[in-house]
Length: 132
Image (tube, rainbow, N blue to C red):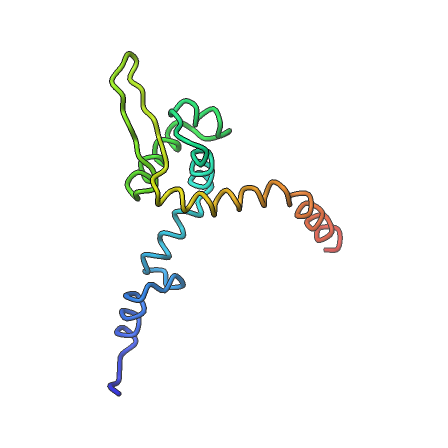
């Protein structure tokens, strides 16, 4: 069995997609999909296509710049599609791709968990804060 250097072991691990390594592409993808705005945009699009203005109204607190940046990133990653319909004014619709629909199943489940379990989390925080 040949001896390998640490650099060779890191390179082999990187090629095997080890999400615990910072340089691994899967680590970077996890960073992307764990973003708050990504989760909310994907969850909002889960039921079906939406226009930019509908997304902006649905997702409270997102700035136009952040929404645009998030949509472009998700389009680049193949999570959603952007369809422009020439009209006056121009109509732009966003929809999940099959890849995005797979991701939406997970992110909607996390969103639902947060909505149904927040009271338990709040109670745990209060217990922790009063004990400390």
